[in-house]
Length: 479
Ligand SMILES: Cc1cc2nc3c(=O)[nH]c(=O)nc-3n(C[C@H](O)[C@H](O)[C@H](O)COP(=O)(O)OP(=O)(O)OC[C@H]3O[C@@H](n4cnc5c(N)ncnc54)[C@H](O)[C@@H]3O)c2cc1C
Image 1 (cartoon, rainbow, N blue to C red):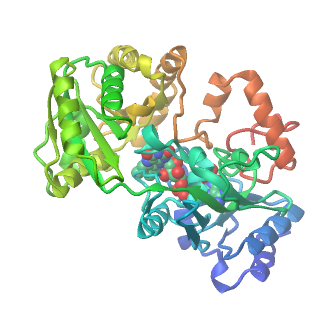
Image 2 (cartoon, rainbow, N blue to C red; image 1 turned 180 degrees about the vertical axis):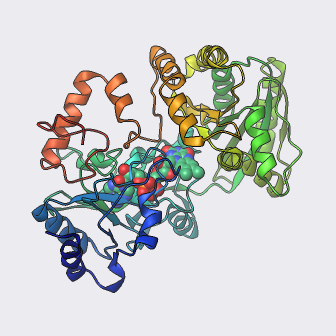
């Protein structure tokens, strides 16, 4: 069947705005967010209802057409990008962006999977509650994508990842069956927890169309501190101190090296005059919904103890909302700062907290012996053991060529080090298309076998995001 006949069949299912096949408009959907790979697609389909999603999936299954679910297309590992065959359609959830219900008593929010994370946060805040999921891409990423990648972000240390926030799900399986489990319950021990299968599945098991998320009381007080670290400061011990002495109110513990901070401030219009310590900086924040706690006083006492113990050189507390915003802007502008320079080769590693310092020492030596001229930008959600250990692309070289060279050499050394310390090559970005070989290299054989059985059970014909994460059983050659 020709491409135009396929597209015509989908057009019959959807209304006017539901099918995009104009090559110029399609282009933004077929290139991954880091612009490392451009795939090809028959069309971008934009269903408006779960029923339409189910009809699309049924038709695609009948015609043997692959499906790539897409949210905000902010995946860092090509998970939302179709392959080059032109035999996959993109199903974009962007028209399914409704907030279905906020339930302040159950402290939950029910949304369409295409709702933008920032809009969901806003709807929760309007009801006096917090959706405790926050990340740099929150203005464009969508809840289905957050579920697909089990997104983490800036407050995992207190509230956990997307997995920990998910109460219920609605999803379309690869034969068009709709799973309607938009459940608000905290306790529901009635067999397999199907919703959790979709978390981190990166579109390979079905299309998530709705979700119920757990909310928390909205913090009304915050104390935000900039901790200048001494050289070789034991990050894990510092975290333990701040966490313990702040009575578990810690929401953020973000590490940044001086180089990352400089990249960010160079990219800002009005950069604050903040400096890193000789061992980098930690941005730490505590927050509470209580009117009865003096968080500044608490944080000052914590900082005094940290200085006294010699773990930090100095620290200061944001004295106003604008100072707090400026500190946060530095942290959030680092990816943009890297991009402006010529990008970076990203290593989203995590190691057990007790091994963070060891990783930094070993990885630093590896980089120096690989090429002493390489520059690093190292930062991350170190409260979760997560580091973005990024190698900066020199300004005057071809970005893709450099990325390929580093990824086939130095990156493997760095991942080997993380793995030897009990860590992982992908803390929060997922596997997608770019990191499949790493899953094969580092993944436990039994775990990969179990993943392939799950994939086979959900999607035996491999129509859901084929080529990402794992293949079903019986499909041995890479697709
Ligand atoms: C500036 C920036 C900062 C980031 N910071 C963080 C961070 O701090 N923490 C973190 O964890 N990640 C971070 N990320 C990466 C992160 O994975 C994504 O931002 C986000 O979770 C993906 O959402 P999305 O809607 O863009 O998904 P997409 O990129 O569109 O898709 C991601 C994957 O999910 C699948 N998918 C999408 N929608 C659905 C659906 N409805 N049903 C089934 N599968 C679906 C796709 O097929 C794909 O495999 C960052 C990215 C950027 C660009």
